[in-house]
Structures are given as C-alpha cells and as structure tokens.
Length: 390
Image (tube, rainbow, N blue to C red; front, side, top):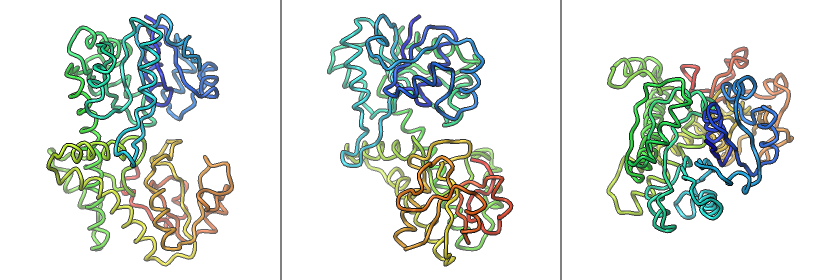
C-alpha cells in the first residue's frame, strides 16, 4: 500500500516509520532541512527508537516537500500537522489540517484521510459535512514526547473514529507494524474519538496538578512530600505512577488540550468546576514556584535547562518559561544554561554556554528536573523533582 504522512514531527515521523516497515510511505513536510535529514536516515528529533530504526531498519520511507508527489496515487493520508491553541479564539488553530484536507480532496479521488492531529470536539463531523465526503476519519495518538515510536510499537490502545470497514482498515494498519499485538481496539463515532483524546490528556493534567498541589501544601507546611506521596500512592486504586512533582504541566499537549476542552465546556454552557480548576491550578503552581525562589533572596538565579522533561530537545510551552516570566516581574537577576540555545541571550536573559561558569555565577540553581551533573552542587539547587524521573 502507498501511504502518505503529512507533518514529520514526533507524531508523524514515528507513525511514518511504523507504517514503512510494511508499506511504501512518503512523508510530507514544509521543512527542507527535516526532509533532507530523514532521507539521509538521520532523525530530526530526539527519540532513541526513531534514531535506531532510521539508521538500522529496512524501511520503505522517503520524505518530500512536494505535495503533488506525496498525494498522487496514495491510498491513505495520515495528517499529523500541529494544531496550537489560539488564546484569542479559545480554539485550536486547525488551519494546517484544513489545508491538507482541501489539497487531498482536490488531488486524489480515493484516498482516505486519517487525522492524527489533536482537533476540537466535533471537527471531523463538520468537515465531512462541509466537503460532503465520508473519506475523513479521526484516530487519536497517545504518544509521549521522546518515546513516540516506542509507544507506536507498544500501543496502550488503538482508537479509530469510524465504525465501518474503513475504521477496521486503519486499526489493522496501526497494529500491523507494532511489536505488541494484543492491543485493545475501539471503533467509535468520530466525535467520541475526539473526546477520548482531550479527556485523556485532561485527566493526566489533573493528576499532575493534584500532586503538585500536594507538594505545594507540604512545602509551605515544612512536610516531607516524598513520604506523603509514597503513602498515598501505595493505594492500588491510585497507583505509584505519574506522581512526581514539577513546576507545572507543559509541553506540546497538556496545556493546549486542557484549554481547548475548557473552551468546549464554557462555549456550550456545560456546568463544570473541576475542568476550570485544572487550568487555573497550573498557573497557581508556577506562581508558587516563583514565590519560593524569590523568598530565598538570591542575588543570581541560574535557570538550568528549559526542556520540559529529561531526554527532550523541546522546550515549547515548558513550565519553566512561565516561571521565568514571573521571576522577571519580581526583578530577579537570572542566567540560563541551555545547550540547545545557540544565541547569547534568551528573552533578554544571558545564556551561559559553559556549565562550570554557570554554576559559579549562580547562587541558586533552578531545575525542573534534577540531572546527574547537578548533583555536585545539589546544595545550590531548587527543584521539586523528588523521584528523579519524569
């Protein structure tokens, strides 16, 4: 089968690799640099399984920036383009997905369009009516950044927003390339599938917010957060996972997905308290972190790494960015250590490239996650990473 994957970020690239084990796959992206790297079997993102599969596996995968080439004679088009949340409209910006749908319907009379991008609840049904077609399907992804291909190879479940043979076809494609075969498959309505994605991420955000608020209470009261969490999480109904305190949830998915679902509640007049509280809790947590740092009266605060989690090369929507903004408002002097930044400054703050100079310049080092190299100056470090994991 010839398959096209549009958007070669961690969702699209991991999917393209999964499918190209058994099918001819063309990846389409607007970035020439990304396309060139993939064609040279080099991963443009940090993901151990993606790096290994590109380098060592026999994949039928090529990448291009040419839409006509990508859409010609293809049987399935997977859409994995970004849909950022727009705070002005209180809605996901679906422009890139809209454009792919228009292009595919114009250039290909038969291809099935499978949306993997996160979209608002009801989007697929609206597009089916707008274009008078049943060729548009939604199938959510449940991938962790940095472990995207692993999560495609060992999926927790497969959800497809179509109950017909089209939905069955997509589910079989996704299982075919996976190593784990005993995978629960759920075929459901497209709007229900969209809701599954947003509610799953909102629940995860709620769990992060809960343990962060537990940690806030313990920190202010002078209690041992670690002992409390271990005691709470020994209850099998709660579970000892996804419970490590942080500066707040961030990254690609949780901030935008929680805001989108809150907008869906408010826009439709649906009563809620909890959903709104999850979003507000994350802001309050970051303000609390900034307050704790400022209370120490530091002369120079060193911000250690901007990435949201360990083994990540992404700091888009990272919680530390908001903490930095709150510290700026308090007039705190800062320096940043982030090897991913090539410039000499970031948001008007000096970037120190040398780690030894960075720790000398900082009398307090702020780290969302405690990396090994910080342990030599642990007495200087402020972190809420108690389990030393994500």
